[in-house]
Image (cartoon, rainbow, N blue to C red):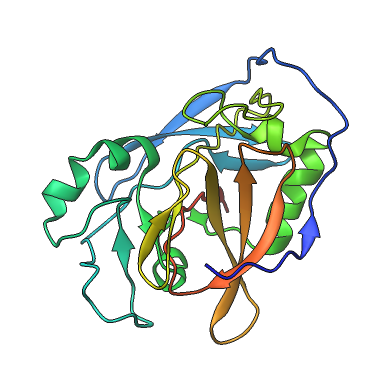
Length: 215
């Protein structure tokens, strides 16, 4: 995965180890019947878990292409039912190349732009990474994680090229709808090692998580 640091979304200005109760609502994706948690943060409504929509699973032997590709961490095969039966899919959802991510969200939702992620950081204000990260599933020390926002970010890792799954339990990567050029797009990175959100650039062919924001 190629990464170029663009912006530090927020500095670590606040620390608390006590989670704050945030109202969580649910909705059902009519495409596959899956129920998702959602949370209002500032003026935005976000999914409070990773998207799991996956009409098929891409075998790692397939050529890297601009067509839509869907992956599950540590799974290499073409059996959709088997991929969905894995613990990683149940916990972290699917991984998408950028072309799949652009249209993966259900009706009424969309893949957030770079600016919408910045708005989220502005709503959260202090200790952005800590307030976005869930307090479970992350490797220790999971710096300043308290999930006060209710966003419940999980460390689902990524599929980078050349084909290699990496960083599960240590980092989460989420696509933005903002492309930099023909080969690269921007994403948000959160890590167990810090309590900030980092905006980075990576190849569109990589497999990252998706969080949808409501229209």
